Length: 302
Image (cartoon, rainbow, N blue to C red; front, side):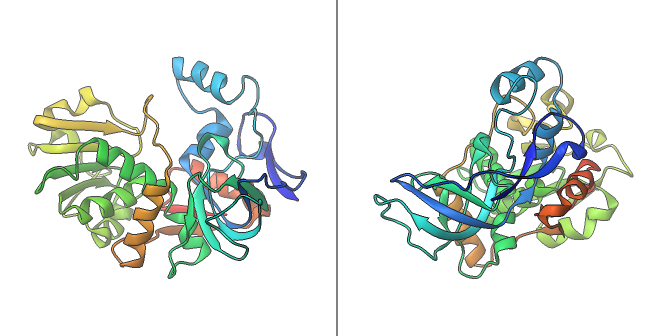
């Protein structure tokens, strides 16, 4: 089968199309023909080993010292079940599914074999493959960090989302809106309309003002791009306020429950897929170059 291989860390040009054996599903696995995946911040961080200081050592130990131990990148997928192991009970051939693989990667390929008990569920009935793939990375990350911040435990929360138009930020706005929060987001002037459409109550344009200079305070601050720190934002937190960031040792987990929640919200029209651009597998270098610019809105689909 065709797969995109990352045989060393570096710029987008290190990604190359290659041929690898087609997976054979084990007894408890399903073989999924991947129709769509996404290029997200996690993918480009692994490709370029884009972390600083001590975290670079940690990442090398986890991912591979001189090159990715698992050369097929990609953490989300949407596709069709082509075959199933003889102990699979919850899926059948032809099912439309979507899911996440976390640090296992492997979705920049034509096929992937995943355990039926892993983070894979039926796609929302009203979603295309591109849309289904687009709600996974940002959606699961937003749900994970906002739940840890306690968004579902209190009502009427004031929340600040830093980076409200990326894959994670655009999801966070929608999840926060679902929980009835008053949402302020930091974004660029180009992202203003999108942020408001998704449900932001207030917007702060970082290309026009410094959001740390404001006098408002918040119950939750969520940095969806990892550009700040708790110290820098401490004066913006209420006395019992909580700060969360995607940049650090805490990594969002992947679970069936999160995917099922996102699927229900999508089917109900409460959550939408935000897609910036779509590329083919052969255009993966261009896709990574675009994500590297830091200007994408929502998701880039492959």
